[in-house]
Length: 118
Image (cartoon, rainbow, N blue to C red; front, top):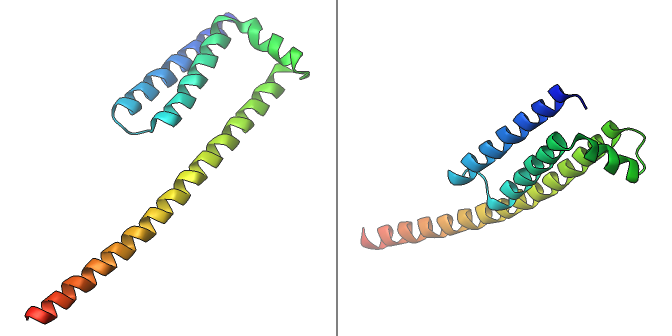
């Protein structure tokens, strides 16, 4: 990896780290997702500081090229992220259904009380 590419990777890692930190402080992302993005920025820092590290890992894992390993890792991370988001959406759907039921019951109670008093 050339020096320019290493510097670019370090800049991207720093931006991801800062963005994750800002979003976490503002409460815009949950801690479990911030850990994932901090891990991504840490790995990018390693790749930027030690460019031969990723080549060594890809050779040890049996990949023909470093880019094949990176694509595989990115697909795996996206898969994990998709599963995590599916779990969150399912939980939110259940909570919404419960809230709708509770609001409906409260509206019925209010209507019954208004008819009784009124």
